[in-house]
Figure (cartoon, rainbow, N blue to C red):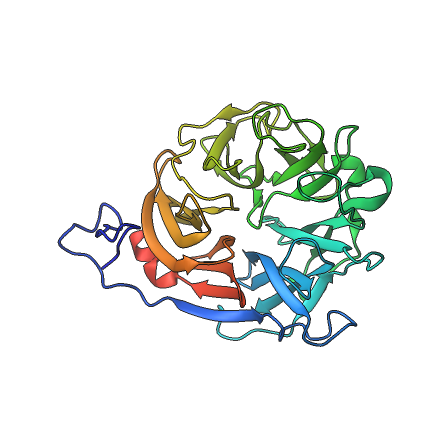
Length: 385
């Protein structure tokens, strides 16, 4: 039987009664990127030095699955040199093509990174984008997260695009002049599920800025994170950055809802926070569901699963207020209350996860200590709408 964190039975949704629960699921999963094994030639120092974090998953208009993550040197720690790499599947995850490194670290510093990638598919043209943050400096003692950056020289915000479902990729394109302002120390893509195409064709990506010495709440940090959007109305030829949410918030996923955008982000040790905009981020308001999911500091996967005229919101994240454990998939209808659906990892794990849909198929990717895992959850979609 499906159980919640306390071991009590959980109904999947209104179509299943308490007396008609399903047997506990055996999830269809594959270890795609194995630490110390996959991407053996990513770094010149050794063939077994590749480790993996910050996964993403995307499906193209033709059903190709693209899974990727950071490829980190020697450790899963944040402060190490890193590339962004992917695998593709053309058959729904049954088989996978060879590894590709999409964003290659500049390798000019021991902590040079092109990492924390996010994807976006233009659903009208089929073009696939992969965005990444570029950091090429490290300082041992600047502040709470251990780094200081000189914006003009040492960081960038870049993307590549593919017009053949990820088989080949463009040259790298910089958006530094779009995202940079006088207060910005660096900019990251929002999270692994940060990019969407709105119903009017607008491309939208959530981002977050790191700003030092701008602590305006009670976080106690000198390093302050603020979240916002960039968008494009010309299929990615040009991008516009709008206003940031005036609270500590990072690693945010977005969905289109009710003529606007709902954003779920990672607060500072106080659970998930939800915000809403109906003007592409010019203005923001706290959304009804704020803090309904109490979860240890961690990124969140979120999509709107659509089947015909029906839809269901799906969220994936740890369900534990003190550590990254009890990985859980949640259901919601109006982004106000969330109901536990499937526990995909009962133990402590790295914590980040993401979701993607193609037709009636549902896929999830998560990170664990041994690497990046892919799940095909399509057998459960009959209970989503």
